[in-house]
Image (cartoon, rainbow, N blue to C red; front, side, top):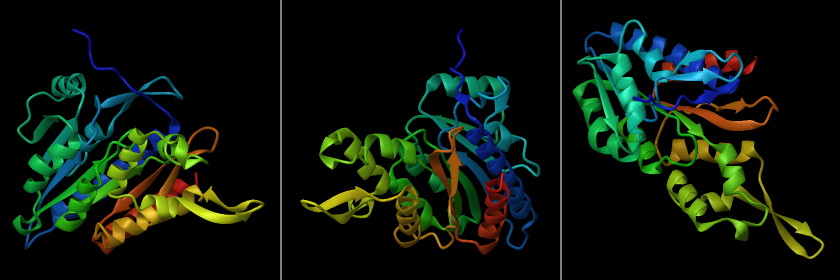
Length: 275
């Protein structure tokens, strides 16, 4: 039987995996030591993949985020791993084996999270969760992000896929963008307001011209949405993840309601941002 397709990842993805692993360790340590009340803390991976990757740099196998999470000590109380690809879920199942604390979900994470997973991490039940929302492109639904913010029980990492956005959505001439990509952007952003912040008018020879804002400004507008619309109290500046040509592939965002969480992530982002 053929196994799942193993994704090849660049150095920036290996950096991201290190960041997630570092935060997961600190998060689990803090939640495990919390008493009176004690908390039931879970790990959620919305795009879990096959569990491991192939390094573009070394050609060696690299553990993916779900398997890194399973190695965290002290352990999370529960793990929810989601993927749309049945082969990848089957591969995870074979690799992990029978564990009562691991739940594998085959399906669209936008539906699975809202229907099956988030209801298990309610604040009033003294449950907390670390949720990784790391799509390859514009496949995430804003409703998931907003619900996570409203629940006040989740810390989330989000991939803001600026490369996909630039290639497919933010064209110099907005009329050339396919309706499919406009709809994807609307779904990820939550409404059509991205158009208002994506372009700015500048005077030209034949009247005002529309120019795309910088990546940084567009990412900052998304950061404001995480705070003002989704309601996360703590959203530090995202970390730009760059490829070998120094182009930003995506911005790694973190959102939480806790000062301690923000301080830990700022320290980790600063550490990796200096590399």
